[in-house]
Image (cartoon, rainbow, N blue to C red; front, top):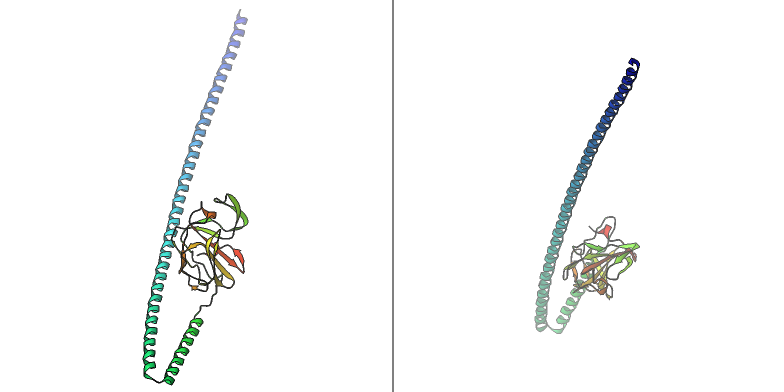
Length: 288
């Protein structure tokens, strides 16, 4: 009887140890699980905070870039306005000089008439010869005052013909999409957005070599600016120049017209191209 009780007690004790060990193991597993869950939540919160910080920095950078863009646009508008004022002042000065010259010529004519009535025919002929000589000298001086055209891509820059966004980039190495035409094609110029009747200014001092009316670019003016460089302006109207005229940078050459049928969806714009020795080049690096 005594031996049987000992065996039963030993079995019961072993079972108790096993249960206790299992409970401890479950407790450890539970603690590890709670620790892992807590750590995962912490990492998730940190990740969310990093994302929020990145978004905030991105918004700040966008706001800064928008301020810089607005400042550049405002500065460009101010420069364009100053150029317009200078052009208007120069035009008024030329008009005043022309009026003064007309009065001088009129006075000279009157004086010549009085001389012809006072002097003999021989003296009148001498006076007429003097007038002719003076006119020939004036013409010669005017021809000598024609400016020398010289443009260098390394040292010179072009003025923007109009203040506006570029809606179609220069692209001769690959075709780009034209909305109105609903097709891809090469573009040998930049298309600058403009408003109807806005002034179009001369990008550099040059001579008008041709004025054409083309289906795609409408009234188109080509100017020689020297050293093999040419500037082309399209989508114009009410030109203030004619072939053979010289214009300085910033002077008005015409106004923005209604777009041709090739740019109906793009809206009013100025076609602005540059050629070097007859070949199209990208105008953007030359614009200041």
